Image 1 (cartoon, rainbow, N blue to C red):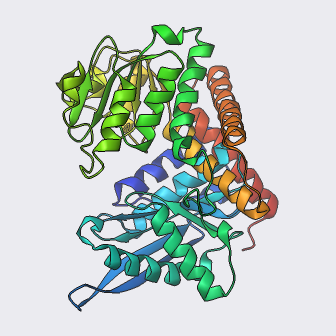
Image 2 (image 1 turned 135 degrees about the horizontal axis):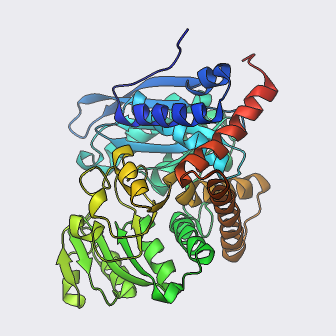
Length: 427
């Protein structure tokens, strides 16, 4: 019987297709294919909220646990109008492979609420977040499911959820979620963790290809938390950052941008949501389109903004020889085929941006210990783990003559499949 699934949701359908392709390459037992293509648990919750005008609105909330084979499920909570159960399931599946590949003892989870967070007052958002936290609390726990921030959520939302669940349970449990503020059981180094992981992957390519960082031109699409620290850390390593962007536009200088000045812009324009680089062309650079950034003259391209920017239309125009994916799914399958044919090396998202979830694991470990690490200890462990993970994927790709994404999937799936097989099918 053919048990293979498909979905109308792009994220879930892409996750399933990538999994099946890798499983076929591995000749994975069909029993394991059937198990790993389905989530262990999906819950839908209603989230009633009293609005400022006294009315009540019921939002839809979701939490998915794709796998707990390697350990508790781990994954963010996002607020957006396109959040759905299928989207959360697709992202939870990708989190399973990311955690497995990252070498950490987690499975994949994901959750969210279908809403427009920009139209909610602070009090409305707090009520919604706390109610959602209470509704998913039966499956949340330090050894069962550990949420974290994602799109349009952050440290404040994590504090609300943790406070709600801890009060419901009558005792304090800081390890039930991560991404908390550093002053409240968070971890020093977490803010830069994802960007540090992306930068580490780029530097590892340079090392293996005997490339001098000081001679490398790098374009970074997106200057949010991931892209900004990717750019800063690569510049500190000696590379030349020739392009950056946000929703106000892209900014290009073939001789290199002043990244420190760019940080000043985003820190002094916090109310210009997504447009914090507005006016940066005054700092000796040219304002161009995102398409111009993606096709600019550079050695490395780091797409750190949104999904699908490198596609069948834009991929052929990419001049970079190396792409390190900081965003989730920035390259479509059609785009990657074009890049493969052109000999472009792509470091896939769930390897390159795993610094975030690895950093969350470090926060969880500190919470369980009740003992904080220094920022230096956190960063050193993160870089070492990222280097080891990159090396495994690179070496397999070289030995088997496959691209980095295929190598990453095979390495990630094998670890989970082996443990599922070892533990058996029962429950």
